[in-house]
Amino acid sequence: MKFPIKLVASLLASLSALSAADPAKPNIVYLLADDLGWSDISTHPGGSIPTPNIDRLFKQGVELRNFMGWCVCSPTRAMLLTGRHPFRVGTGPETGGELEKAETTIAEGFKAHGYRTGVFGKWHNGEDPDTAEFRAAHAEAFKAMPNKSLKSGLGANEHGFDEAWVYYGGGADYFTRRNSGGKGPVSWWHNREYRPQDAGYTEDFIVQHAMEFIRDNKEKPFFCYVPFHIVHAPLQAKEADLKGVDPKVTDKTKRTYAAMVQALDKNVGAILNELDRLGLRDNTIVVFTSDNGATQDGSNLPFRGGKHSVFEGGTHLPTVIHWPNGKATSRTWDGLCGALDMFPTLMSMADLKMPETRPLDGKNIWPSLRDNTVSPVESYYWAWRNEDAIRTADWRMHRFFDHNELYDISADISETKNVADEHPEVVKSLTAKLTTWADSIGAALTHQTPPAKFNVQPAPEGEVLAVTVTITATAKPKDKLIVPIASWGGSQFATDWVEFDIAFAPGHPKRQPFYSPFSGNEKKAEQLIFKRGEGIDQFGREQINGPGMQNSAATWEHRIVGLCSSAPGPLGRHGIVFTGGQPGTYTVYLDNLRLRHADGSTEPIWTNSKDTRAKKVADNELFKDVQVRAVPATEVRK
Image 1 (tube, rainbow, N blue to C red):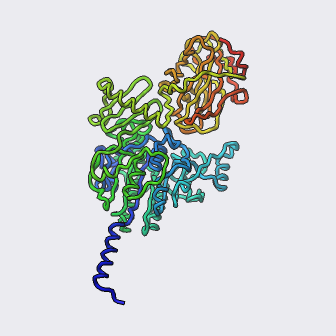
Image 2 (cartoon, one colour):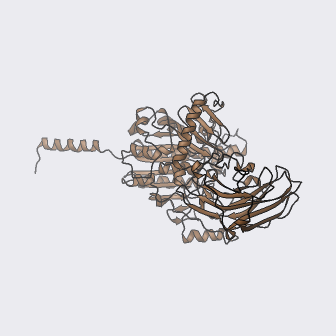
Image 3 (cartoon, rainbow, N blue to C red):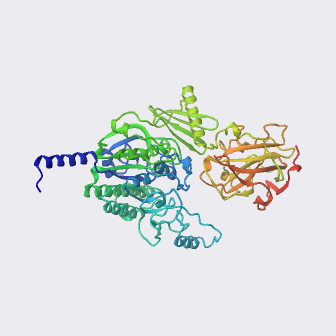
């Protein structure tokens, strides 16, 4: 049968129009360096390590000049995966935390639209899966500690990834993929297949399997997440990479660091070259960034601070997006944005509908990035140890227990001059924003006074804990004794508070004993969770100062303190801390020691004698006659 020429032309035109209206979905390749500083790449002034492939990508794409992450690994990764603040998803401010199955991830978002999804490298948003093979390896690794329980997780595949070649810890050995220091079993997996037998350098495996994934899926859209391990400690480079370092660099640590950065650059180049070879580059959205700033071995210049700080150097990350078909090429964009915004932004760039999620904190910056207009992101927030901080387009403010620091970022990106006294109205406005933010996510800030709603009455009953210590005349105010009283094996998050009822026997010094969680060895005062500027109760008092009763006429007092600074993780050990300086025998009482969660529920830590976990404390020249016992509440008198 012959069709009229006009009809054939009409059909061809319709097919052409349909094709134009429904272009191929773009691929996504998300390259995440680990601990890479702003000036660890040579495209930035001060960068002394040559990174030609990364530099070329920055010139080809749109450099995001104000891209924010967290100051350590896990939270930034959770921000990318969920578009939600790390405190909402059970990670941060420190590393660790298991991403809940109920969280909707960026991988699930793309998978719902027909994308193949893969992750290759360092997961660090949960523990190793529990399989028979891994359980056996765990038992073998800890055969000298037969009571050490296995803490298992869901695994990356449970979060929307079709293909996963990953390890689950942090700071793993590059050649054995063991935890740093040789502790624990090897962590290296292909999906749920445990593969401790694979030998080689971690980054080689990461790149090899990422490129295989790209080749295998070249005919369909894919989301390829590549969280490199480089340049995280331990600093370990291959001999071949060390040979490529400038001979003028003679310091061993600097040579190794430079070799690792250059290896990262080669690996980025290999992935980009593979996209070019397969003809996929034009319609692939490539993102390159880091998870946090560099350690002292790298360079964050011109920023202040680095990893483990929420100054610019810890959270302001080198970032570029390249997508030729979307005209994301050859320019810079100064809008405020960050890892939180990548989920909704990449979905928008691919013209895909966002899935149903828990409330998002990230925003879609694509229209502003595309049109070179002002960012919809007004501010970024952090809480870290003894401070919380806010970053806007113009300002960065750090709020401590007893003071604020304000920096005019538009003029002082290095945060060299604190202008808080010169701009009280800005401090007031940003303080209100910080407080509103903390309340909105339920952050239990360790360095700020808890909300008034927690100021409830004490309710001791039944048995209470009594701890008695004799302080000798030799003990000075700087001397401390930590008396262990309890342990707790549950998980603690940045939205958790610890509360307790406390009383003191008559005759105590002005500086009273105080309660504090602690980690590690009770012989080391630096292991205390409550330290200077942290451990602030609802009356605005530092616990380390040993505050007495707010109401001098009261026998018991209820206290509550935020635990944000030590989250996430087990709040394992608990003690009463005595301080030297005034000799005598003193007794402190404690009851209703418990954790209060954001939803108002509580978990007991010490309620009666069955919860006591004390060990004999030997006498010494500073403290002696230590007693830990349960007594009736009726025994406590003013």
